[in-house]
Length: 161
Image 1 (spheres, rainbow, N blue to C red):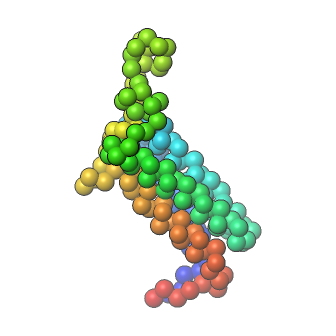
Image 2 (tube, rainbow, N blue to C red):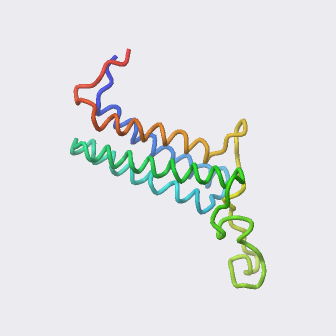
């Protein structure tokens, strides 16, 4: 079987697209409210989808490299978020339990009937101790490396079997 550059770019673009679709599914169907850093991880995925589409359309080497940079960006944000979830380091005060309180300072929690925002230092869902941020960090890092590979891959493809 031969893996073509176009097929690899399509698969990598699909990874970012389906990552965001899954996140939206967890949010709107599963009822898991995203925290601020969860949203931050989505933006580079959308950018990678755009760069992937441009790579498919124009075929230049620059688009896969930019998509790889986007994937690496979301991997870095997800790795940072993973550390915040595990309490290895502090996250932004606006997104953690230490920064939100009903202290009369006029923040969101002062409004009557306001739903508390999701906190970045809590793990809302995991499987075998692996959170969504952990999965995104690992998957996006691998995909970032594959984007760089795709940028330098010959258009005719490579034999994988």
